[in-house]
Length: 119
Image 1 (cartoon, rainbow, N blue to C red):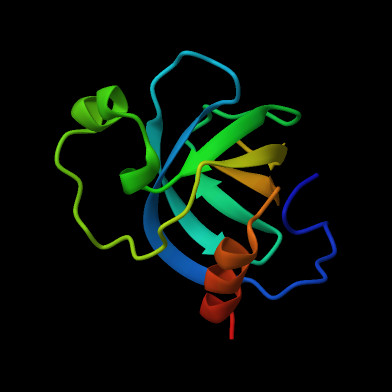
Image 2 (image 1 turned 45 degrees about the vertical axis):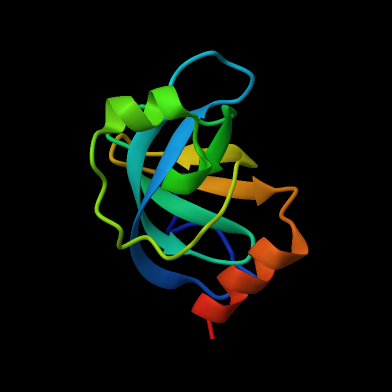
């Protein structure tokens, strides 16, 4: 489903933070991706065609990824103020440049952080 055709029931807020993504239950390292908007139920990532609908992923901020992935990512600017993850997500749409992710199993603390951004 493309982002312009879906109906939303939660407010979206533009955001520019680096998050780290990997396929759920894989041994792969986390890959940095830019989040471009977020809501209490999901986010849109600039994924450069790496994600596809139906893919289950894990999303986390830099402080919450494994050391090997941190080493691979190199030095990351500390502009990400959203200390989250890892959080399970489901890719619900992708267009080759961006992907929409439904966030699952959010802790109350994480949901509160996200909701504060969307006020």
